[in-house]
Image (cartoon, rainbow, N blue to C red; front, side, top):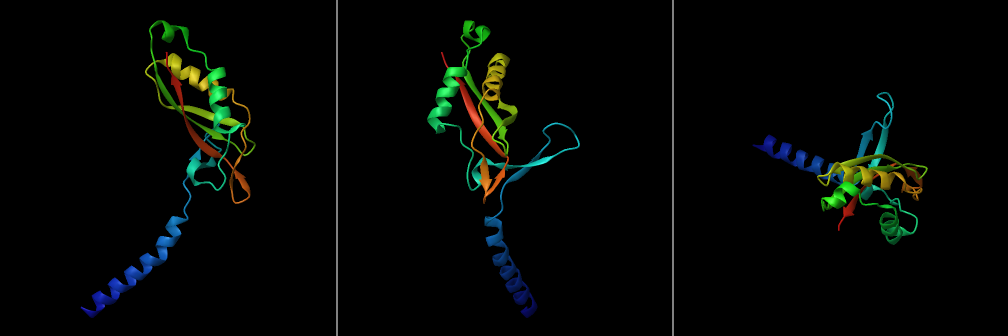
Length: 146
């Protein structure tokens, strides 16, 4: 019984030592941007010290999307609406890369248009961990409404 109490105490002591470390863990994924041989670590948007930002901030991003987005003719004629949820990486140089559709709008032409709009974005301000620039994954919805 005494051994079980000591073991329980040691386990609880070990857990209290590990918990503060768990709070400092950053969510990092590995992405293969070009080939099967090169991988890079990408930080998630909410887990960097300084988040990447579009020039002009959120208002500038909305204005850019509204100016650049063109409703695909096929989808317009069929009155198709929806939201395309995309992800992309803002690199250490601020360039946008690895654009992907996470959840499509149900029409391929809307998905392609969302990818095109994101691909035309200018350089962002870079995300940082400490003072070090790091690649950061950004998730952005592109809405198509008539």
